[in-house]
Image (cartoon, rainbow, N blue to C red; front, top):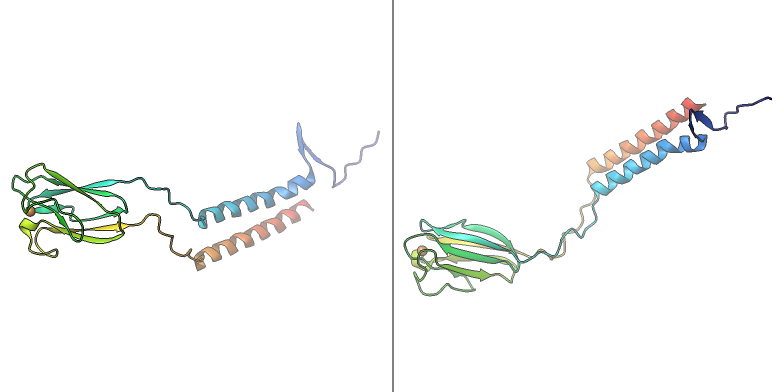
Length: 182
Ligand SMILES: [Cu+2]
């Protein structure tokens, strides 16, 4: 019996074989997968904002200061003010609410304010400041987590260069592996 092995015939490796066609495709497939994975990481599509649950942050009134005296929260979140001083304080949020009378908060008294509008709001203790800019004062920045995201940045030069290098490497690899086979 005469057996002819031609170049186009499947190559046998012990128990399994890989047809030539599949073998030659493999580097290309791997390379395509690598590029797609890279692209997926580099160019994430939008929509990463989950519907944020209403949150809250606590600000202590301590040593006649707001601690912290500057916070950032999401729209709809609540600030809870807690008097940690033995002396009395109070809270007034500019343009919004007030804890009550001047020096109306005793030790461990709390008062909260929910912020439904994005923007920056100053607050103060009326007893220990004469305005919203000096004395016992602070501010809160309220951001809208559902605001439309800023325009998608176009890929930077580094990204384009890297993609180009990958494509070039893939082409070189493909040519090299083709040469090796023939
Ligand atoms: Cu005070």
